[in-house]
Length: 137
Image (tube, rainbow, N blue to C red; front, side):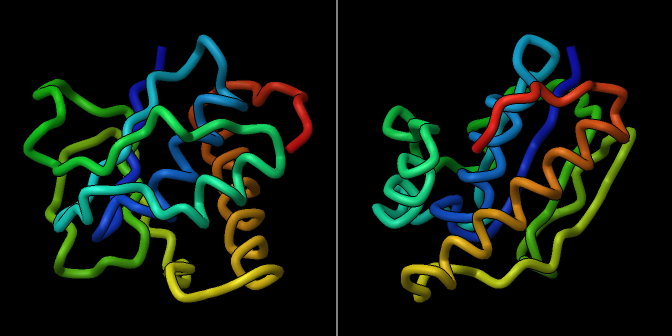
């Protein structure tokens, strides 16, 4: 099982969606987590709605800090354009996805970021040797 961590500043949008996609597409081959360098304390309702619209339920997710994560090695750590606000965490594979923060976006613009995250998660799983589930989103 590959351990993947997605990090953004608030852990309210991008990293939450990435975690949801990793679990959805990676199935039993993935233990996915997300966290924020300055967590907002809640998952953005837009993220809940955007993911729910494609059948992925994030209602059980919470916005959490990096300090709340288990102190175990990561197979992959992906930061989401948070620059210096995201500390370096050791991992076999590190990547930064300079994605637009969709917090203030609406409708199709928000969905576009969601869909880009889905594509990047599928690619990441492939690079980790995990065949993404053939489920649609």
